[in-house]
Amino acid sequence: MVERRRAEKIVDALTEVMPGRPTALEHRHPFDEVRAPYDKDLVDPRSKLHALTILSAEQQVMMYYMNVGPQYMEPIARQLYQEISLIEQEHVTHYESLVDPGETMWERLITHEYNECWLYYSFMEQESDPRIKAIWELHLQMELAQLQQAADLLRQYDGREPEQIVGAAGVPEPLLFEPNKEFLRGLLATQMDLTKLGEGYVREAHERFEWMQEQLHAGGKPPSEEVIDMHREKFGDEYRIETEGPHPVESLRAREGARRA
Image (cartoon, rainbow, N blue to C red):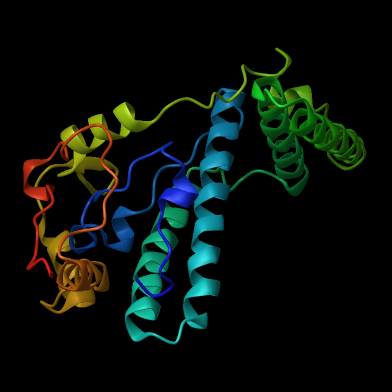
């Protein structure tokens, strides 16, 4: 609305644009964000890679909203970005708590470098454009060199081999880039009402969850709801890209506003 740009130019039909869990039902109490960490000595090395990958993705999103939001002059844009950045801070806490806090700095360095190698290897393996594939291969070579240096530091200061940290079975299967529309619709249809209570998941809005919503919203509409109302009032409908049909959750299906001539 502010810059007169449409999301189609960004998502390029690869994913849809429609409501997920409404922000009014998103925030959780900090007690319910923290998860039990994996055991660094017992966990499958792939789980370390998965935890670091989702953590880095969430942290990057959080930093984007925190840094870009204050650049807007429009109050609704600043408020919306602030709201989303708070959600992303909660996500970062959620996923960072999965990482074993007992890992030494040398173990963590090995895992980070190994994770970067795995990601660039995944990109390279699935890239169809030869020019872009060469870029991924170049970065993979750089990360492999850094992984070798990290391994030397581990041997020197921790007295261990990198295989003890990331396993000796070789590089895991690549991270796959696949269509996500059906997957996301399935999550929305079956998990919209899930929330956390301690270590477990529940489907009812428990007392601590409701208290947190009241502290943040004080009974008012969050900016994410206000901006939808503004778009509906200004353009006559909601901004969505739903290529696979109506929203899987009936209560979140689009409703038109007073369409202007």
